[in-house]
Image 1 (cartoon, rainbow, N blue to C red):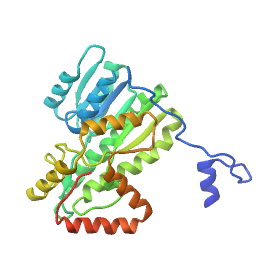
Image 2 (image 1 turned 30 degrees about the vertical axis):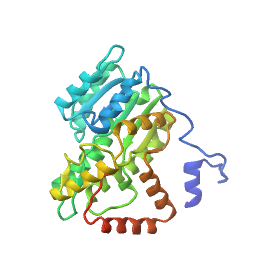
Image 3 (image 1 turned 90 degrees about the horizontal axis):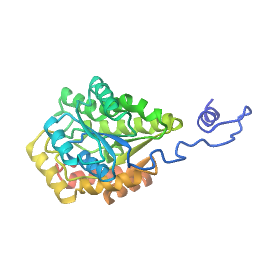
Length: 304
């Protein structure tokens, strides 16, 4: 057992235990282009989801837009509809597997299949653990994490059937490091990371790629519509995003450019690259830096 079992399971070994070859899940691009493909985008009515839908439409990709916000979906669908592109919108709560299974049937009927699944829908939360109620904590996990799980479960059969599928799951730097006031949010994003990294290995042989997106802080309405235990914290976080946040349009463009290579992860923005580098070089130093930053900013809570 031990090391020999690990090597045999993940790298391939001869009966004697000698390692023969290294198996890799990262050998090829899964979706080579977006033109005439079908993309499913959750959380498509606003923010990054809307920006991704716009960018995909500009690349002649057919769209199946999913959100709980029916009026917002109608507006986006009307905006993106043009000759040569099929755009459908589907009202669903991503925390419900039944909703997403219903939507998967609708999309199958309308588009025939799906090539790209973008699990983007999320709820923001800025509140200390004692101030985060059990129902709120569970809601964050249901939408942010189980929304990704349910999306993959509902649409994976479509991605597998033609052997060129791609999944993009949106995570956060809070999956790497904790931050005061982000217990629920960080937990959900860390769960997405572990799930996605494991799923990538499982479905690669079916021609399906799984990529994690770390988009950096963005100027969206996510904080405004999210959970917070004080108006002061919400306003501070919004001010931070206005000052340091990236444009969702830019994030969408860069993300889709890089996704074609089927990377295991995509990081956008200097902030994320610095945090990632520090976390890899010295987790202890990264933790101290995070503690210093949170103390220096008082209760300035940020959503990455």
